[in-house]
Image (cartoon, rainbow, N blue to C red):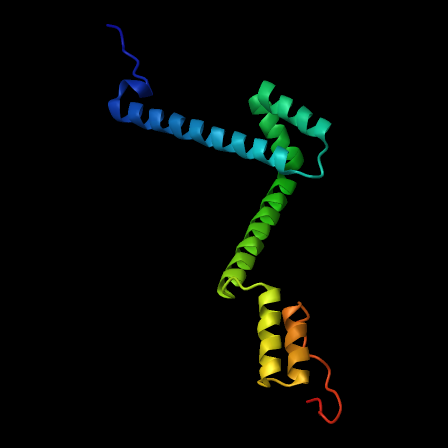
Length: 150
C-alpha cells in the first residue's frame, strides 16, 4: 500500500486561504512599492542623480531595492509624509478661513472701513487698528494718549 501525501492546497478551505493570503501579500507589495516610488520623487533633499539611482534600483531589483530603501531612508520617509500632511492641512485651513471671510479681499475690507470712517461710524483710532488687522498685523496696537494698559 502506498501512503498518499496531502498538501495544503489539496483541501479546498486551505486552498482558498492560501490564495487569499498570496493575493493580500501581492497587493501589499504593490502598495509598498508605490509608496517608495512616491517618496523618491517627494524628497527635495535628494538630487536628480540620487533619485534616478534609487528608482533604477527599485525598478531593476524590486524586492531588494525596496527593502534597502526602507532600511536606509525609512525614517525620513515617515517625516516627509507628516510634513506633506501638515502642508495639506495648512492649505485646507487657509482655504476655509478665506471662504469663511466671504471671499472678501483686503482691498474690499479697507474700502469698507474707509466708508465707515467717512460716515463717522468709527473713529480715526478704530480705523487705524482695524486697518492694521486687515493688513495682517493682528496684534492689538499699543495704548496711546490717556488710555491705560490692563
